[in-house]
Structures are given as structure tokens and as C-alpha cells.
Amino acid sequence: MRLRERIRQFVVPRVIRMALEKRGGRIIPISGEEARENDVYLIYLLDSAGVARLVVDDILDDQVQGKWSVDGRSFTEERSINIRELAQFQLWIQHYYRGWTFYTTGFARFLFNRWSHWPWIKVKYDRYLQSRFNKRELPRQDRMKVLRYILSETVKNANFHTHPTTLMSHFYTVRWVHRPDKEELLRYYRLLLDSMSEVQDLEYIELQGYRLKPQALNTITDFDLEEQRHVDNKNTQNRIFWLTVTLIIVGVVQAGAAGYVAWLK
View 1 (cartoon, rainbow, N blue to C red):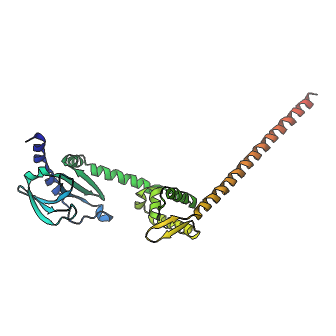
View 2 (cartoon, rainbow, N blue to C red):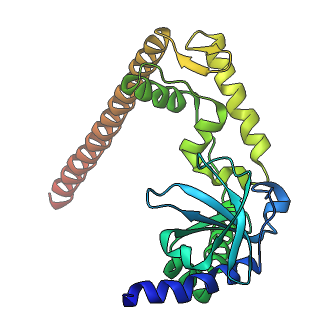
């Protein structure tokens, strides 16, 4: 027997026993407050094609017990395999920890995560980032910025549809979901999209969301023209201001020169 196979035969049963110390039930919460208290493992054995065949329930003596699957999805058949047969399979362990799921294939990554406390570090750091994000004041995007974003996405994909939640994820990342003011933000973007639907810039389709209408191009063009007129007017006012300042300076210099000449005489 090769060294690698001997190591697997020695380590894999011990890794399974480690994971079974925090075995999960058939139903594991993955969202909500219950998920934030999770710290359980779900152990699978994969065949040579990478298909899950056995979900492990226990090890008794030299037998690994669990539920077998024919299709890799439904685990219903009670089955036991000898520990010596573990060489034919690969470990796939799912660690449900504090609302996160960490996937490890093989025993090396599992042992690294366990001994380095990587899941704890990852969750703690993420919660720190979330707490900082929650303290930030998020700017509410105006109508034209949202409309321009929808236009750019529609140009890329003619079937593009959007919702308040997808808009918020685009502008703020998915961290908005855990903000205390998320309902206020959600209402704002829902009202914004509804208002654009009322003036025919968008169209709402049941079960799909909001999509762009041709009228939106006129709205964006009119806004751009108005903005350009505003910029032109501002530039003209600036030129007039600096011309006036220049004339005043020239006038002061000329008056000073004339006064100086008169004083000399």
C-alpha cells in the first residue's frame, strides 16, 4: 500500500469522528437568527466522479453508517460501508457556522480550518465590516442615476429587468440586507421605480420587475440638454464675472497712473 493511501486510511476516519462531534440534523437553518447560532457539520462521501453518494450519520466500530443516494440529491437508503472502503471516496464536509457555510473537500482543508479557527476569524471580520457599513450614511441615488444604470444594463441585455432589491445590491452591495434602515431604503427605491413607471420611463411586468421603455431615452436626452444649458450659462456667467474683474483692475490701474502723473506735476 502506498504512503498516500496509508495516510488517508489513518486520517479520514479520525476526521469523520471530529466532524461528528458537531453533527447537524436533517434540517439545518441557513438564515435568520437561528442560523447565526449554528456550529454544525454535514459530512458527505463523494465517488470518483465527484457525486455525493453517502451522507454520514455515525461511525460504529469499523462501519460508516449513513444514507445512500443514487442520484446525488436524495439520501433515503440506509447503508453502511466498511472503513477500508473509504479509500474509494473523497470527503466533502459542509460547516454551517454562524450563518455562513464553509465547504471543504478532502481532509487537509478541513483540518486547516479547524486548527486555525478560520471560520471564527472570517465571521468576526465580516461582522466588523458590517458594523462599519451600518454606521455609514448611504446616499440615496437620484432618478437620473438610476435611469442611466437601467439603460446601460438594457443595452447589454435586451431582457434586463430590475427590482428595488437588485438596485440596492448594485449601489450598496448586498450588505444593505443587514442594515437597520433597510426597510426605509427599500421603500425609497420602490417609490422611485414606481414614479418612473408612472411617467412611462419604465414598465412593470408582474413576476419579472421593471424594464426600460423607449420614452426613457427622451427623458435622458432632455435632462442632458438641460444640464448642458445650465453648464453653458454658468460658464458664461463666470466669463462675465472675470471680465468685469479685469476691467475693474484695469480701471483702477489707469486711475492710479493718472493720479500719480498729476501728483508729480
